[in-house]
Image 1 (cartoon, rainbow, N blue to C red):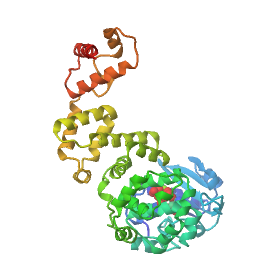
Image 2: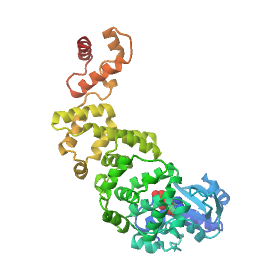
Image 3: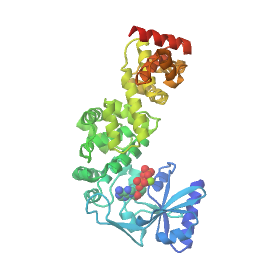
Image 4: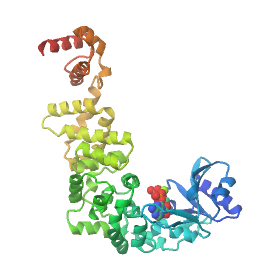
Length: 439
Ligand code: ATP
Ligand code: MG
C-alpha cells in the first residue's frame, strides 16, 4: 500500500481523480512508486492512464504537449508538473536503439510489461493499491534488481537498459539478480548502437544520486565503457578499473551484494557534492589529463558550461601538483586561481573540504586550509581588477596596441596577486617600464 502525503502527491491525486471521473483508469508509475515505498522523496511523479492524449489535453486546462507522438502530455497542477502518458506498448526494436513505433493499449499490465526492471514496473492507484504483475515488491524487499521478462531479450531490444541496470543497482544499493547480470554480459556488445547522448544522460544521473563509486565499479567490472559507440580515454578507464575492483572477487561483490558493497572508487568521490564535483573527482582519481577529461565529457554530451567548470577544477588541481613548502604551494595556488578563476577555486576547496577526500588524494590539510585565505587575500584576480589599463600601458610605453598588452597585464597581475606589487596606478606604471627596459 502507498500512502500519499504532501502537496505534490495531493496535486497528483487530483489529476488521477480527474482522469477516472472522465471514465479512464489512472495510476502513478515508475520511479515515484518505488521511491515512495523506499521512503525516498519523489522528484517527479509520472502518471499512466487509459485516456488517450487528446482526452488528456481536453481534460486539463494547463498542459504542454511534451511527447504527443509517444502519448505523453505534461499537466500542470498547483505548480507541479506531471507527465501523463497513455498506456502503451513499444513495437519492434529493429535497431536495438529506439522503438520504431508505439501503440496504445487498454490494460495497465500491458504498459507495465514494456518497462525495464520489476521495481520500475509497478503502478499505484489513487486508493494506494499497487498493481505489481512482475514481483517488484518482493524485489524491493530483497533489495534486488531484476529485469522484466527475459533479460537478454529486453537488453537486446534497447541496450541502454544495460546502463540503466547499473544505475539503479548503485542508486539503491541493490544486488543485480544473476540472470539479469548474465543478460548484461550477453548483450553488452549492443551498446555500440546506443547514442552517446543517452549514455551520457544515464552516467550523469549515476553521478547525481546513490553511490557513483559503485556505479562506475559495475560499469568497469563488465567492461561496458569500452563498448560504447565512441571511446572514452582508455588509460583513465584502466586506472579506474584497477581502483574500483582490484580483484575478481571484489568485482563479484559489486554485482552480487546489496547495500554496502562499496567499490574502491567510492573513497575518491565526495559524499555531499553535486554531479560536477564528482565528475571532477572521477577524472582526478583515474589521473585523466585535462584534455582527455574534456574530450570524454563532450562525447557524453555534457553541457558546455559544465565541461568548462569540471575541466577547470581538474586543471586547477593538477597545476598544484602538491609541491613541498608553503611558499611554493601559495605560488601554485595563486597562479592556478588566476588561470582558472574564483569559481574553480571555490569548487576545489569544497571538493577537498572533507578529510576523507584529502586523504584519498593526498592533499595536505594545511594546503586546503590556507588556500581560502590566500584567495581572500588576492587584491586582484583578473586583469580588469588592476589599477592600470591597457591603453595606459600603451601611453607609458609609447607603443601601438597589440598582443603584448595582455602579456604585460598578466605579468603585473601575477605580482599584484602574489602581493609583491601594490595595486596602484603609479606603482604598476613604474614596474611595467622597469621591466620593459630590462628586456
Ligand atoms: P529517475 O528518477 O532517475 O528519473 P526513473 O525511474 O524515473 O528514474 P526514467 O528514466 O525517468 O526513470 O523512466 C521512467 C520510467 O519509464 C521507468 O521507471 C521505467 O518504468 C520506464 N523506462 C524508462 N526508460 C526505459 C527503457 N529504456 N526501457 C524500458 N522502460 C523504461
Ligand atoms: Mg524519471
